[in-house]
Length: 475
Image 1 (tube, rainbow, N blue to C red):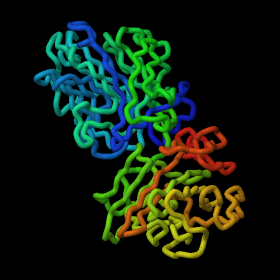
Image 2: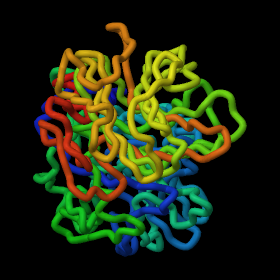
Image 3: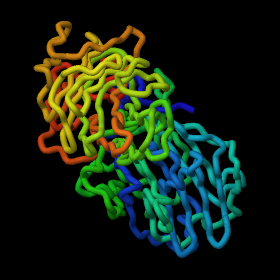
């Protein structure tokens, strides 16, 4: 199944998606509106849903990408806690259901999903159809197609939601991650070729420009492109079926999309151990560790790793036990900058840590400070800034001389990630990452030389934020 990955080599896709919407289940964020389908109309049994999504935290409890809800009845497209896609129509009993055997485990990838329904389709196996990244899914653990003429979305299922189940309890039913190019087509069962195409050079599935899609004019069709930060539920189909934002603000508009994939924290990697009290939130941009009494320390690393080029990111420290640095990709690492890895750490007390040795480096830092990391893998130096000032009189543009930088103990085969670590076995560590799409308000606004990123402080000349387009050019 083709994917759009963090290491995607496509630089120019032909059509570029500008924005996505970041849904955070811990904030109960979602979009909603009432849509009254006409009783016994074609709209109730024939429709298509298309969108791109990127998973946030692991183990989502029926994270609902889309749902139509009524009193005890619903139609839902959701991600189960087992990482399977589940599509279900329920009206006093199950009318139709598809549950994949395939698991979606890649939190660095953008997926494209198409759900195409027509209960009057002459082929009983084609009345509910599921496609992922341009290919039809045919292997299901549950495969129940609707009976002829069944109302897959019944008239009383008039509350449409993107990002939540109306009956969610304790976070269940809330989607966590990113969604873009959300399209609902009324009265047509369409194939993926209406929404995307395979790249002729790489074979990777990529989106099409939907501005000329004629089916968008159908009565109940809507198209959310998330390009209006003041109105994330804006319908650009022409039907003006705008959705209401719930616990979403302009900061939840992201430039992390299916045509330019940005790094986030990787929830699948926490160092040598998977801890029970580590929490990822805000589209995997926030990492919090509440572990106590451990010997192995919780670590979070960026989803994208690099072995060459010059890269920049910023990290807002929310709890003072958060250590910042860079780390290679080994899984048994116990500490950033320890003897088992080639990483480098800037500690909260202002010292640097390399090869398990601490020495004087810069100022101490604490909650609400912003730590910038400029990683030069062409010359093997790393530079750390505190609130915009590079420590040790560092100059990230100094190249081979490495003025004020920390030498990275590396070989030509190393792949490095931005990283944070909970440095206390008794306290709390919490860090919010800005890989170019901050989940917190930026007071100034700075981009890299390619115009990507929204950073608090100036990006050093020649350095770039970690996304797939920059990676294709400089990685």
